[in-house]
Image 1 (cartoon, rainbow, N blue to C red):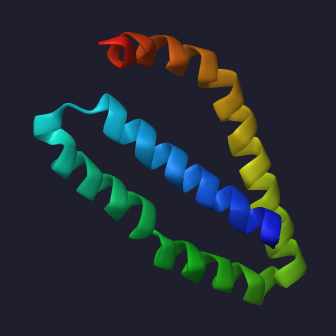
Image 2: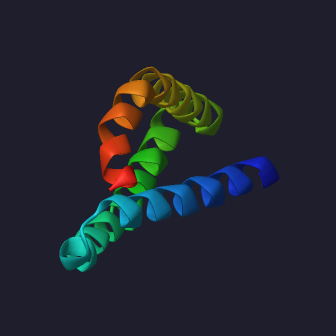
Length: 94
């Protein structure tokens, strides 16, 4: 749980910093409010889905499938990261 908590805090801080860096000043408030709503506002729905899945297939399998989904998402992100970095680089240098 410690590693999960540290990873979550690192991801949140990195995403927040990168998003605020690449967004124009006049749009930052709107973008950050949408980001917060998308990131934090969907957590209750995920909890509801996980609770329903745990009731049907059991807690260990729910955690297993959630972990597999996270690993698959990380691998997809890792594969797209060079493309994302290349498109963001001109914005960061500006």
